[in-house]
Length: 632
Image (cartoon, rainbow, N blue to C red; front, side):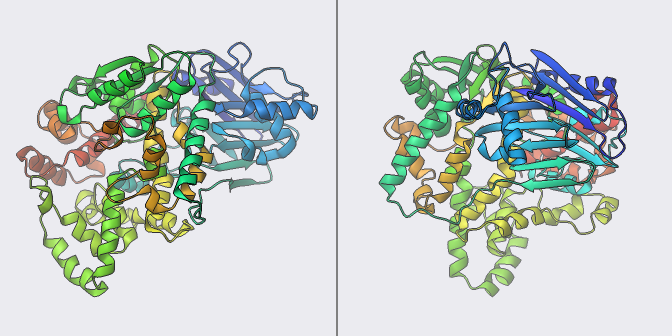
């Protein structure tokens, strides 16, 4: 795993400042502490930081083709590179290294930008083609590896993170207000936006080609749910088992110590089970727990570790761990409010003491319908079919507006979200489920000036665009597609990348092998979500390897006890940040509304911990990147 950065003055031809390039690359040293490298040729400059995994001795970057006319810097792993390399050698290409990076470059010589179609793995790379005076930036199909860029006035500045781009004084630090609105809704900022108005994420499954004549962005891959397999459940289960084994197997290549994250959930347990079948040595597993028993999964992780005789390591996350929030806000570059970034950081830190590479269980819920919200969405769709549209819109909609939000009440009485969802379309209902701050609340949350500048913008448009793009009419497939395009790439994968890279650990996600994702999209929905059981076919495929209590226990997720922490352990710290005299929130947020949220939460009437966390992380980001610009 590595970090990349670069500058291309394609419009002006102005030489790249070597000092700038070194500063840019220095900000991502944590992504690659083992080595650095630079390429400069007039208006182009490439910078690189390396974490050595494959071809430790010979994988220094940038890497060049035979005549030196093409150069590449690369972050990621290509798991099928050995086969690709053999074919290239047979066709006359000459290699100087044994690295997967060089394989990409020779593929580019043959296929141009279409080389991405041959790659199986996670990647973000930049290729400089001197003959064409052309820069190509590319990102893997599911967005496991990040890539950001600034493109304006004939200049492209790019990096694995935003920090390198901010090193350039010509890049303005203006907040994108639509991105901020997205953030308070979702707790993350969906692609291609970033919090900065002039910096963009290269979307997953896209490449960008830049030369003096044109700038062209292309989508080269998408997941298709429209073609459903007619094979029998037995055939599909067997094919899934084979793909799972293959996806794990190809991710075991490494010249450095390798292990796994283990939460005790179905996904990570399945990965560990498959690893134990394939490795001759005990799997090195790493887990995180909490003092609060309702959030702690270590007993389940321990049971799996015992079952497969792993070399197991644990760490307990306590509220004192919040001391690392300042560090995390620096690593994420944008406001990011998935609180499980905290345990993810610590499990990465524990793992890094023993390994350099860790396999994760990420992607199982999105591919095989593991989230509980999918069951609720199915229930809502059934109810919509039974209730006439006028009744839903006018009667149920009116009741929803009056119905109190009662987080303290028994589950049966907590119906506001359900009523609100039923009153609208399935698409609007799913967006409402995924939103922390609802669209209707933003009139109270945002300051008047910000509301005016938003000109009626709604984050729902992000979801609506993806619902329209999905090639399936099946309700479950449609919400899976939206999650893959939003929540997976911009929350889950962002969280894991930054948390693991903060400690120079490479995280690999076998359940996000693109061939596995493509296959999962063809599985009929009733084999994913069956009765009250999500991931039905996945559990069938792993049933012979995992204990029953792991296969069928209730999903917990990687939740953090924020509700308790805000009322007790971080109460003073959070209050000072959000409502103290030096709060930066007030430029955008109505602090009177924040105070009401705070008071309701402290009284126990409402659980506003998710919303308060969103605002807290925004305040920390403001101080780090906008008020104290010395952060970068």
